[in-house]
Length: 118
Image (cartoon, rainbow, N blue to C red; front, side, top):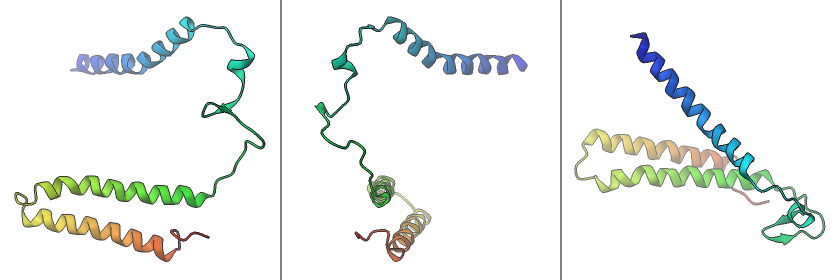
C-alpha cells in the first residue's frame, strides 16, 4: 500500500522539477549578447517620453473585477440555458438562486458607489 504513495510522490517530484529543468535549460542555451539597444526601456515597441511612472486609480481595477465576475456568470449560465429543457425544477431554482446572489452583489457594489466615475 505504501508503494502506491511512493509512486505518487515520485510523480509529484517530477511534476515540480519539470518546469525548473526547462527554465534551467533555456537559461544555459540562450544567446548572451547584451547591447544598449536590447537593454533600453520601451513600452509597446516605442521608447517612453517623459515620466514613465503612472498611477492608475484603484477604481479601474474594481470595475474590471466586477466585469470579470459577471462575465463568468454568463459562462456558468450558458450550459444551463442550452440544456434548459432537460434540467429539472431543482436546477431551475439553483440557477435562480445563483442569479439572485450575483444581483445582490451588484446591488451592494452600486450602493457603495463602486460603479460611479468621479
